[in-house]
Figure 1 (cartoon, rainbow, N blue to C red):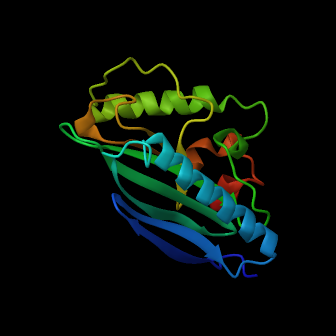
Figure 2 (figure 1 turned 90 degrees about the vertical axis):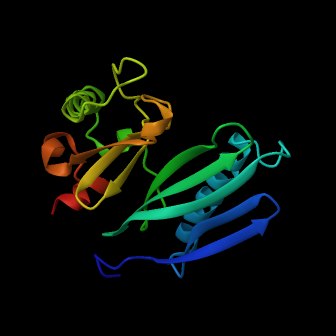
Length: 201
């Protein structure tokens, strides 16, 4: 398979009362077990997100869900699943979960897996995000002291995008807060065999 060849993605649609859902699946990926593993994780994540938002337990909850592809090249697939739920009140709430896979092995990468073992990626990324918060003059609801070791992220082009859920750091009006970090700015701590390493060259 060609290094830069993207994997084929099919969009599935589920429409029920109070549910309008679009989600992705990889198709025609060999070996079959890799595609099956990736698709199982995607479906389990979609179901967990629906559950977290009270669907279908709460009869008032109305959910609209879709996805965005962030990277599909160099044997790396990074995507975001985005769910908006409304159960009454002033406004609904959107949650986002991103998944980054190797399309060769089916491995799902946590944030820590992108970096060399023992590298203090938490402190490094935290300092870069603090600088962006200051530069962008973002008013926070809480003091930002550190990212979580498993902070939400996706990979887009040659950037690691670390993000925070609605209300996690700032008021609702700010939505998701995204902090793009160039792979070249963290090159010294990137695991060269991991997803970010593949984006470097």
